[in-house]
Image (tube, rainbow over all chains, first blue to last red; front, side, top):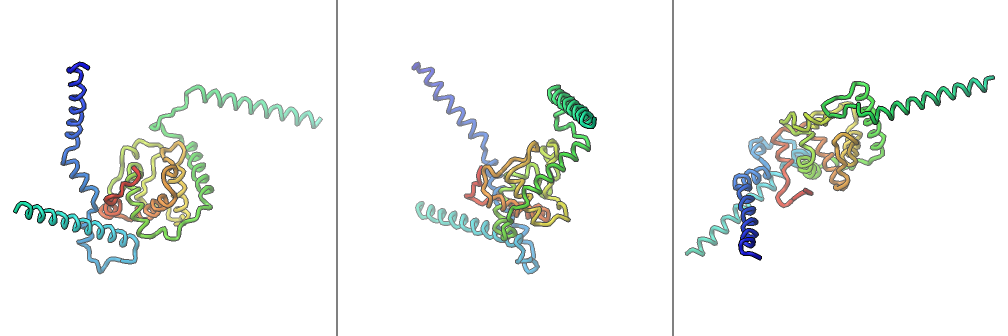
Length: 91
Length: 186
């Protein structure tokens, strides 16, 4: 195989990869991540004593938001642990 | 004498039926029927097709057993994400009044965020929803989701549909987000 053809074969997939990486910008990923999390601010603002806890709709929303909250706490805990490990490693 | 009268009447009927069949087949092949979705049926054709559809679904769904836990929170949560992935483009969500599909499809898909027929029994409506989701509807754009989804999953969507008309946009957002790690089926 000629060196010129070989270089085209290497360059073309590399160019395709670079273009696809550009198309999936970090902003897009951030938006997707935000859209895939329940927005529970409404639940936080509500007076929980006035909520009908026997209603499956309320129960479902509570479950979803509790799960998301636990997930966030877990993530932030993981971040803190990682940061602590990193600082120890640097010292 | 009476026999010949009956025979001639029978011949007339056969001749009339033959003319009707030939005319019908001729029209079929002529290409004159307007097939565009933006060229709506006349009232009589629409009524006939709608009646055919409604009666067929009512009969076919009449023996379906509705699960006793249809109103449970678990089913609502499971059905919300599937509705958002599979149905929202045509059947809308709270705060959205139209989409390209609702504007372009004919017959127009029902807006499921609006309360349906009040007089219909809840379990009858649930059975119909289940049957429609599972089997789809011919020539309407409604697919048969039963090909790739089991009955439990379809019942979860039915459970969500029952509460959908009363949901606000924030409530819908909470219930329809798919959990992290749950890739659904897509």
